[in-house]
Image (cartoon, rainbow, N blue to C red; front, side):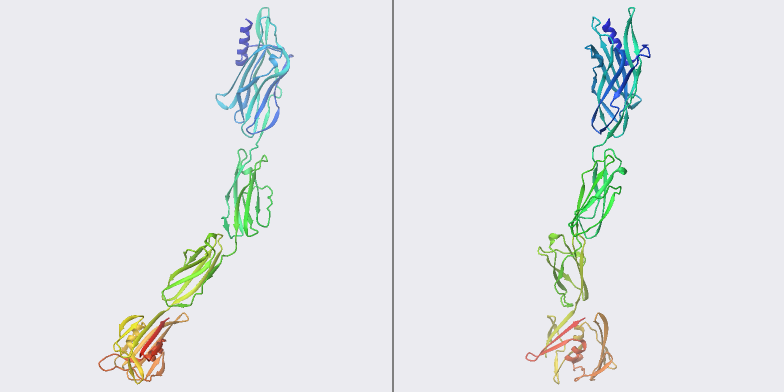
Length: 500
């Protein structure tokens, strides 16, 4: 019968029931320990339920409420204390960890303990003070959490006049809540989100960074930065809120920027660092002498710069060209007739640039070779027919005017009434186009060049049966600015005309 009553008592303790209430003068105190404690996120705390001033009790049933956002109670680590079995009595213990059906944030630890008497009624109610229950709780997030009692039933089992009944002992729930201040001991993580390129020639560099933390909001994280260069060791700045910082690089070479983050609990991250090579020295660029004038349409531009292993880039006329391992280079340029602008630039990895601009003119050179009395000659090495051939008259070699003029790119005009010949051509003098005008008459020794009258030893003439105007070779060469040479042994005439 007593054993059955004990099971009934445990049932009523856990689930609640109807009791007689003992005298209010006989009041126990039930409280939770520790009252206040700061612990780290992720750690476990030991929570104890203690009783004092207990007049008499045969068992207890209660609920402890907690916030599941902050605490996680391990149901396997809910353990009965020694209070109800301190005299050697056998007890029955049951517990359950659950949540409110309508609000899963509210957790409940439901427990019940009852003494089990033997056949001789050796063990009656227990009194005094002691540990009722203890359990482990894991702290999940930063904040404050309350632990409080609900529906506490401290029961005594009474038998009077052969009747057994449950008697509820009044309980004072003093300091029945605790505030758990969970302190974060996990350092934040910081990354550099913006920095100058690894190689730069800019003296001021901006760095931006961002940290993440398991509990501290980003706007409450503070930062400290430093810059270590070849001259300065680099000191950490005071803690600050700014997430970007600009540094003036103090020395050529490697500059290492580091940042660390601190959360609101004082945890400091490992520094995040980036190394920037500050280089404001222009690269080497040496060009072989470039002549102001060339005669070939192709020109080899050569020079020397940094070795390619340094990351140098070489641009000629805006196009990248290869560099030999020793830093030398040669590139073939194709020129157009007249002035050509040659632009060369060397750019290193830091962005330093050195540039050179030169002007080279491609001049058109015409070489005419002919022999007295021979109809065959050459223009720039190509065989041509000269009609009529060069003729020596009065010690002067006369050549066909139109043949010479057209070979030089000019177009003579003939006015039949006056028997006048006009040749107009343009050359560049100092880069400026200048027009020239030659006028001469058949059979007359006088002629004009750019309006100035001059005289010939032998006048222009048209030999019979040829229909071609013949003029002294030296006169026509000098008028056009050409040079003339005469090989008397071979009776050979060479005219060289350079068009500018």
